[in-house]
Image (cartoon, rainbow, N blue to C red; front, side, top):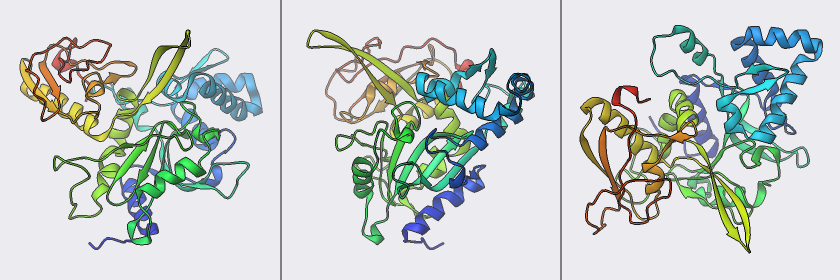
Length: 370
């Protein structure tokens, strides 16, 4: 099948694939730029998945229930952050509301699986995100139950623009003070994408915004390999954004890292949103599958180049906790050309600087999530 080399064709290819995989086409008109969420989808999800809770709130709020509940959720997102609320829900007048349901570890409880299926994943094109600059729009917005999870700017070399232009657009035309781009409060990650390469950032900071590669490196080097069936970067929407994969990433991989530093004699808290890069996500998922298949007691070597996030791969978090694969295997993670001896060190909360570390395990193979 020939590849459409126009920018619109690129956008069409991305969204068309997502629609076949359970995503719904979002309506840009329903996006509330002030609240930076989609109230109609959020309300529809809560009403369909938590009828008893909604009925209890209806007796309290009456005809104002929708605006009151949406307002409460928006305030919690501002105060606690989107990731925290997505995983642990919010409480309104003593009524606990879930904002997402994640895939259960097993299929023994059909009710839990049914709740998971009620999640509404939407992809919306050309979303106008600003009340002040109403002409500005983001190419793609991915939402879960009306809550913004990721934005993406798509470029195409055949129209004279590349992933570097997308990065420039984020740095210069996307104000981090806009509600949609507010760090940890709304969209968790932003992708700059063209047919050949992908970069990402979790924090917009004007011209100082730092982008990291999100390439799959399957040829063992820089960039992405050829894809005879379409775009080189199709793994983003075919694998990463795939419905179950995307919800799994939100449930187990993304985490808010909080560190304290002494600056000018003052203790300062520094927060970073850690979103897995492709090679980290790929490595962890393959290790989980291998441990399930092969059982405990195996050794695994994961090779990452210098500065590619070895520590985050070996300490991947699960729902805010360390993702440990308990006494299943020993893991050495080091650069391919590392000359350090293969001595296994105990991995701690403080990342090792040597590039060689041991994955410390505390759960058995059959308990591991997918």
